[in-house]
Length: 417
Image (cartoon, one colour):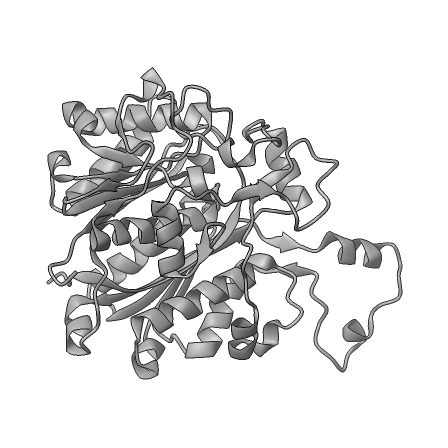
């Protein structure tokens, strides 16, 4: 018998704020987290804007994870911070958390080229590498975040790390949901973290010609579904959710944010960097997630779009929504959070899953910022200008990534919220 799965804790560390309430209020207010890059000297790059996490307090992270003192991989710090928040928000006992599985989404393995270059040039080995001390950090493995979380809380229910680009966070949440629904556990910690805000990240994505070249107007740069959109904006952040079976949450008297009721993931098998222009893979992802939830498209009340602000992605997503929803597409409100946060790559799907849950919990849809001239090719009911009251019971959240990887999640309002 399938178990019902609910969200009981949310942790968010993002360009629009730190913490569930701070992020949520700023999203509803239409506050942009995009600005000039300050993490490094970006003057030599064509694109010099991004969504930085401005208020990261590392003190709580270092108290809980003393081994990360001196950590150079920023996504690790962001992820640990969001995970700590989620666990605290859920108020879950340590014993219950120890039995949890952990599901992580990341994107690229991080290498510290300056240190590696020094070694290859024949520089003397640092004392750390000659024995008698910790190994110098030349790279950050993809599973490092999962290992750190497991060491902190036990998490002997199993550990999984997805590196499926922009779909990774949504897939991590979806796989945790599937595991609990199937009765393979009662608690899961699921989320993602990423930071592409470094010279290689910005430079590499710039070569793909998908970044908005609007250094002088950073807060207006990301314009999902707008006819004048020119590209996306890279950012960083982390989001984690505590998932529990409904029975487990009720037994401990947990406060429930929302329920997860459907998940699907598909692959376009089209091109490495472009979505299938007809939206076929994205449409399959949405259709299967809706069917997995036991619903019809007409029963989906709102859509949290992937909405990157790139010409190809937005057009393909709008076309896919039209394929799935038909005439109902124009009666289903659509919002795109990246207009405010920028694109957090792997972390975006987990962040937008949390936003979808909070939409149902609070009854508000955040606006799509900078959408003033809707593209006729993206003819949808966009939430424009300001937040919108929402009385519906369901939200579909989309995440579509490089390599044609697609993931869709369906959330439902829980009666206790």
